[in-house]
Length: 432
Image 1: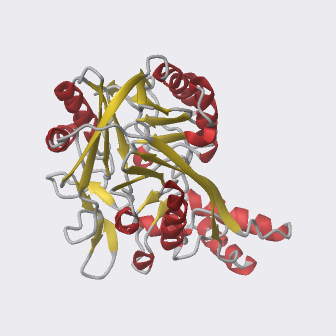
Image 2: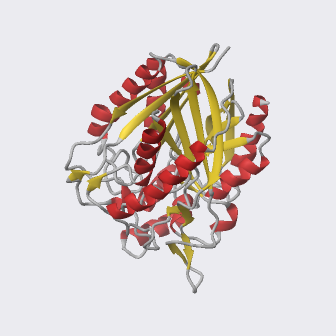
Image 3: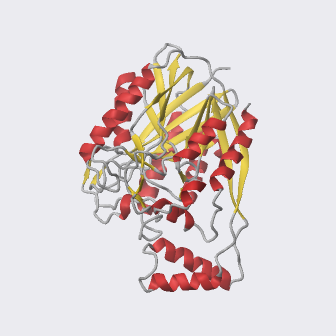
């Protein structure tokens, strides 16, 4: 048996005049800096089939992830469980979910139904039409495109900004495939950093990763797909020195050129292309919720929000309202947070979907504990369940921690990071 692949791409640029997903932006798009795209990479080894899809949008809902996995898998003849759908997390793309915004549930539906969904299905279907036998090469290098974004002020307060002593994942991985004729067939780049170098612009853009993708495609002559990693606490390292919406298109080009140089260097560091096999391991991950917030406390906090003296974001109002409603109905909600996990082994590399905007240390620890040579945690993949900080960061607070604490009516425990890592490592045993 020999590994076969196919790759296809569709443009998913929105119509101008719509709102952007990032920063709760109120200014509509008025131009296109570079087209958004959805790329599908199909993998086949004997009877084993896997489909990897990446869309250049910010976030999509859990429900839409499930729909895309089902429908794209059907188009490509791949079991839904073996379909991994991911987003790049560009903030310069269209609204596709109401998460983190003041938008209603219906906003973004036209874009999703008319552009994102049908073109993702089209890319998935096309990816399997010209499968070719390939050999695989892999290389890793250090990149400083990212930087920790949890800036600690003198008064011990965390804000969004560059934190030069904070943790981030410096590894950039490039997986490349070559056909029997020795010519490049496709590339996959993995790195972890927010795609937010553009800041609050009004131009549609893939952000810095678009520059990187385009450059490696030109250098190699092969279509390239990018998968973001655990970037919940990682900003783009723009030279301006801060990241909370303060970028420009100039910074997109500047940082994208750095990323492009790193990707091309890593690609050229691949010394050997070998036959590779393909395998998957599945499991159901359970993380017990903490007890639901007491009714009296929820009512008090809801009143503070309504009076303008409590938390500012509509997210808290929705969660508190749901908590109160559950109490009044005599409900406590599910005992566990549960999701079905599929790990993919591609030769010596393991791809691990993470359905959160997870902190980078989670990826670093999973890689360190793994028995495989390359373990790539894919953030923003197969689910969108808010931020996932590491336990040691929860006491420091900050934007991401607040989002984690208020993502659901019943809060995930402080050690969710450890529970998630250990659950994935246990499933990973099935790939040995």
